[in-house]
Image (cartoon, rainbow, N blue to C red; front, side, top):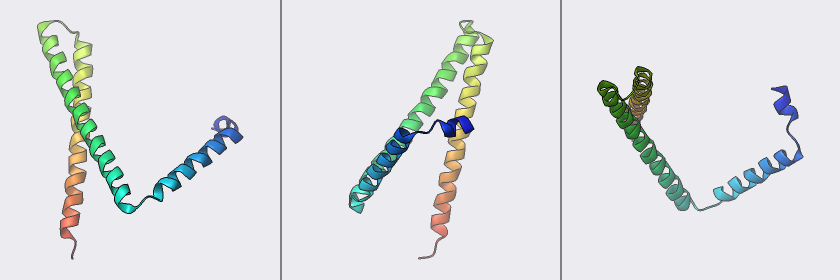
Length: 110
């Protein structure tokens, strides 16, 4: 950790300050433009994430079928099924957080 701290030089600090300036310039946009940019990026992120989830599960199903047909080794099948299981657990945790947030919003008094 000390080596990474010592590796900081003036150039990296200057680039960090420049990126902070650019971020503050972005914050100067009108709120409607910021909302559009944030909404589009969040929606695209969730869309990409869900398509990756689906692709991962499809890949595991394909690998499982290949394993039953003898085209894939047991190790490959187990790895793909474990990856699909982790994907499914992540999707369920995300769903639970969204439902909990929705229920919190519904419980708010107006």
